[in-house]
Length: 111
Image 1 (tube, rainbow, N blue to C red):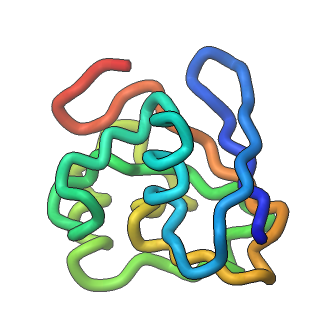
Image 2 (image 1 turned 30 degrees about the vertical axis):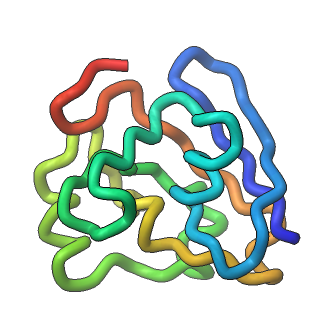
């Protein structure tokens, strides 16, 4: 089961065990509602409220955004070169140790 570390806006961090096959967003939402991952659309890649910044050392392994995801990321606050939507990062065993930063602001909400 992949372990994912979330660097939180308040400077804290939280590491969650998320089953392979689930997205980073699903794991964050299902594990006691990790703050900052709003996920308004539930994983449909149509809202951008699950934006995370992937640690640079992991970015190539999770891949670059494409299509709708790439377009949505043009509009998110705190966009970076390693931004992804957490709903579009589906975990596999090789993602064990993944680290993402949760921005302090998501579309339409201040955290």
